[in-house]
Every structure is written in structure tokens, then in C-alpha cells.
Length: 177
Image 1: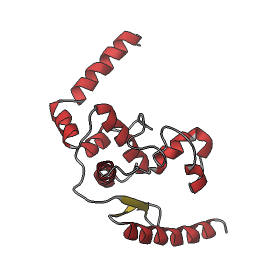
Image 2: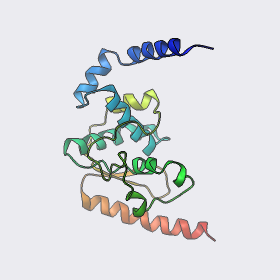
Image 3: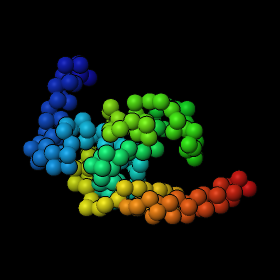
Image 4: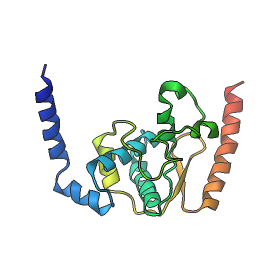
């Protein structure tokens, strides 16, 4: 029941209320240059983990650590986003899916993608602005399919991946019986 001008004015007012001086200060402290960058990172965090809010500040810091080291972000949800609805229902993302050329594929591009991949709740944005104090650079799904195992080294990550693959093979074998 509102016209376009009123809606835009309302959204601009809400944006200014949300992005107060405290949040802007935190944004700068974590090395982000604009609210848009924070929202984009929050969308990646939320797409990685929608259910376990305690992981949000950890995943945020992991991505911030990668940005600080000029590493590719390598976020599976970003390359999945490139496929639109084509991967809906696909339970296991494969290397071939990563090969897509797209401005959002963080396996191929440096830094953040050009915009958000979903609408993240405000609590996720706040988790990005208040990241955990961790050194993690890698994450892998936990066996059981809920949550992530985090790692600071490639060796730790490789062990987590191997453990996950063993679980996944058993899971898929039992599922297909």
C-alpha cells in the first residue's frame, strides 16, 4: 500500500538507522570499506551456515583472515549461486561445478564477489562486524552434516576433508539402499 518513492524513503531511513556510527566504526576496524562489502560477506557467511548462529562470527573471521592474506575466499555457496536454480536439490557439489566462469565464483575471482548472494539477517551482519578471534583459514563440513570443522593449516584441513569423505561415502551408501 505504498508508492515507490515512499518505499525508497523508508528503506533509506532504515539503512541509516542500522548503519549507525558504532557499526561504521566496526566495519572500518575489520577492514571493510562499505556497508555493501559487509552485507556481501554476511550473505556468504549465512549461505555457508544458516542454522548454527554460533558459527557465524567464526566463518566471518575465517573469510576476513583469507582476505587479509590475499587468498581466494573459495566459498562453495558463491559458485553455487552462479548456477542459479540448476543445482537445486544437488546434495553434493563437485569440482566440475566450481569450474563455472562467473563474477561470483570465489574459487576464480579475488576478493569479495560484486554483491550479496542472499539476504542475510541483521544478526549475521553483526556477526561479521564482531568476528571471533581465531586464526582459521579453512573449513569443511563435519561428519553428520551439521556444522563445520575449522583449521589453520592445510594439513589440518586435509585431515578434516578425509574424515568428512569417509563419513559421506557411508552416508551415501546407506541412503541409496
